[in-house]
Structure formats: C-alpha cells, structure tokens
Amino acid sequence: MAKGITKRSDDYAQWYIDVVLKSEMADYSPVKGCMVIRPNGYGVWENIQRNLDRMFKETGHVNAYFPMFIPESFMKKEAEHVEGFAPECAVVTHAGGKLLEEPLYIRPTSETIIWSTYKNWISSYRDLPLLINQWANVCRWEMRTRLFLRTTEFLWQEGHTAHATFEDAEEEAFRMVHVYKKFAEQYLAMPVIAGKKTDQEKFAGALHTYCIEAMMQDGKALQAGTSHHLGQNFAKAFDVQFQDANKTMQYVYGTSWGVSTRLIGAMIMLHSDDNGLVIPPRLAPLPVVLVPIWRSDEEMALVLGRARELTRDWDPLLYKIDDRDQYKPGYKFNEWEVRGVPIRIEIGPRDCQNNQVVVVRRDTGEKTPVPMDGLRAKLDVMLDDIQTNLYRTAEKRMKDNTRDCDAYEDYKANVGNGGFYRIHWCGDAACEKRLQEDTRSTIRCIPFDAPEEAGACMLCGRPSKCRVVAAQAY
Ligand SMILES: [Zn+2]
Image (cartoon, rainbow, N blue to C red; front, side):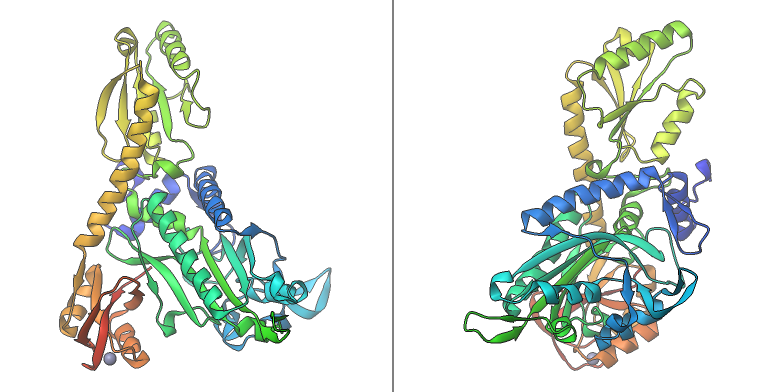
C-alpha cells in the first residue's frame, strides 16, 4: 500500500478508486453518486473537449445550447424513449415555492427538447442537413455509481442531426462512430472495437446503435462512445416534416451521438499502474514537470536559475517548475508520479555542472541523462514515444485477451476472468438474454470488420453468419 494506492493484483476496483482520489482527478460530493471534478481531471476533460470539438467542426458540425429542463409531456412523446429513460430521471415538481403545473425532467439526454425545437427550424429540404452538437451536463439517477465511470450527473457532448434521407442519416451515424474511434486511438491511446449494438443493447428510441468498445486492464469491456440512427422516430413524435424537391412533405431522419466524462474513467483504468495515474501526453494538462534539487540556498539559486534559463522559450502550458521550498525532492517525485505527469525532469547542482538533466518517463519509469542543449526537441520525441507506447501496450493486451470461443461450457468457465470472446450467435434475443442471465456478460457489439464465417450459435446451435464480441463489462 505504498502511497495509499491498493495494488491492482489485490483489488482492481479499489485500486481504481484510490488512483482517482490520490491523483486528485475527482472527489466525492455531498450528494451520493455525484462527483467533483478536480483541476487535474478537468484539465483532461478540457483537452478531450478541445480536440473532439475540432474533429466535430471538421466534419461540418456547429455547437448550440439547449435548456436542461424538459417538460414531462415531451419525454412521453416517444414511447420507447420514455420507457428507457423515465426510471432513471430526476424530476422537478416544485419551483419558486410552488407546485409546478407540469413536472420538469432534468435532461437524461436531449433528443426530446431538441426535436421539439427542430420542428420550428426545418421546413424545406434546403434546411437539411442540420448538424448540431451540444456540450452539456446530464442527469441519470444511477443506483450503483463509480467515479467517472457511472455518476448521477456527468458531462458530455451530444450531437443531434437531421437529414432528408435514411441514407444520409446512416452515413452520419457511421461517420461519427469512426470519429470516436479515431479520437480514442489517437488521443486516449485506446484501441477500440467499432461495431453495431444488438437490438437489446441499442439506445431507447433508435433504429440501431453503433459503438466503440475498449478493453480495460482486467479484461472487462467498457463502452466508450455511441452513435445512434434514430430513423424517423423522433421526427414523427415531434412532427418534424420538410418539403422535398418535389414539394411533397416528408418526415426528417435523425441521428444522435455522444461521449462523456466516462472517457476519463476509461483512460485511468486503461493506462494507470500501481504507482498511480498515467495520462497519455496528448491529453495531459501538464506534460512536463521540472524538479530542481538543492540542499543549500546557494544550490537553490543555481538550479532554479538554470531551470528558468533552460525553459525560457518553452510554451508555458508545456511545463511547470516545482520550486516549492517546503517539500523534499523525493516527495515531489512521488506526487507528480501519482498525478500522472508524462515526463519528469530532475536537475541538480552536478547536472548543472555537466550541462545535462535527468529525464524520467512516467510510462516506463526509465531515467535518461539528456544534454541541456537540444532538450526541448527531445521532449517532443519522447512525448510522442510515450503516447505510442501506451497505445501499443493496450493493443497487445486486447489482442492477447481476445479469442474465439465455441463451447458454452468453456465460455461459462472463463468469461468471469475477463477477456473478449468472439462467439457465434444466431441473432435471437432469447439466446442473448440467456447468456446475460447465466454469465453476467453481454454481447458488446457486432464488429464492423467481422469477417463472414458460417457457424453455429454458441447457445442454441442454430446457424450464424459471423462472430460477435461478448464480455463482462463496466
Ligand atoms: Zn441462438
């Protein structure tokens, strides 16, 4: 229990909570199930937002903001949607000291409020497509919560688009799940499987749902993002029609897609170790920390002077010099390690004499003496290398823990140990339900790249055309 962090091998769930709290990513709140996102965690969220937002804009989307209160009658307009979400909604019944005439739902997601507004914005095919994203908080009253992974209130983005045809909406839903895949791989250093959810696992009110699924260090799956083709369901519920080029009235096709602060939980679970948090450099609020080492006032003046001189032309957002006088270097090393800073630079009096520093990588712990000349360029190379190394490590883990499985007895005996299982499934919801009840695992997705392969359903033996991915999940 060095540093107050439980070892992964002792208790993976406790290790995760310890890392979140000790690295000051988040804290508990007075309301059960909610969380306080601390600056180290919010800094990661800001980097997620900044980079994803650019990717959304590059694919033609703009941002808007809709209210967090939704009239009860709106929620009830799409039958599957209300059935799926009502049990976990918080509802405001009183305001201004009075009982409200109509209760207001705190948004669990914004399809209903947005489609009621789109009715006023869409009348002609010339108004389409409408490609809007919103950054917001949402509220889902969860019974079992876990910091970042499942909280009552969380932050997310939700894209809501409207299209003239089924094909256009399909293209959009497909495009956006691939934007998420690219973001997960390039920024979170998180390999994912992209695919389609089964009908039982799809979004309440969607025709179908696409998703990205990642594997955590314990082999469990984590759904990291979803993109839904809504068909005309919400357009019909809210009477959103447009006049097409032939002057015929048509219902609009829709999509919605989202990722949330859950991504931060995924990042923590995927990369961190027994010494604390590991943040991929491209999302790190603080990529580099310099820790000067001194014993006397004279040495302090020397090393701090050199550290400041060395970093004079660096981007202020790249680094920080830890010049705190009240802590010993060992304490500082430990603190920055727990907080997941990708690179630590140590600089002592002897280093100054030799015109070098010692560079320590957070991912491998490797220490390398590096000349002060040319240090700045070396850091870029090393940050890239850490990013790549984290991805490759996660990729190898996923590959090593994914296997074909054809015998249900084999599956039942092993699925609890983690890992992804590529199984044949007939497509029947009854078999899927049985799998879930027997093993507390689920079909995570039907991968887009699953090759055609004739087989027999692992549960009932009926024919199957390809393998799906099943696992226990967060
Ligand atoms: Zn079956």
